[in-house]
Length: 225
Image (cartoon, rainbow, N blue to C red; front, side, top):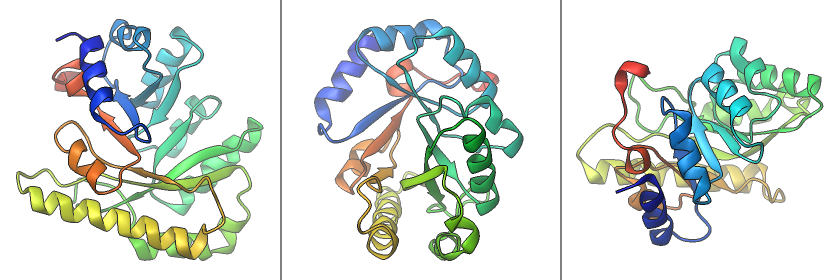
């Protein structure tokens, strides 16, 4: 099926309150235009310089989501236009984002990346580490970032119950953080979890944002990562 048909099929099957991120990393700009032309506006990239190039070449109303591990020296490439940074995994990174956001006169929306899979290859914070950040005086001085929720990546496994357990853990962490730190903050509302192979389960467990690539654009070319 075409990119347009793939997006139409996914959107018709998900609740209206769930945001679809079209994961466009490594994909050519013509693929993004095909998705854009059928109404898709939110795209996810994991390389700052690739995202910058696409941002410069593609329509201005695209919402760019940074979903990969963000190096501090690459923040400058995305900070002026990024819609949401999904992958905050340290206070140091948060402080750097705040610094560049201040220079650009912006308040940048971010999600805490939570380590739900416990795989060595994955990044992310524990619940305890997130609380440590939110309790710190350093965090309280950051006026140019806004924490909007949490993000997590499930284990690479065929064990569906393991995946469900991890999604439940992320949802529980979101609820605890909401109650403890953001009870009166309407913007703290996002749970970014679920990809092509498990997004339906993620929605069942409370996802508000899903990140889908191959089900839209076809299999990823790993030589371009």
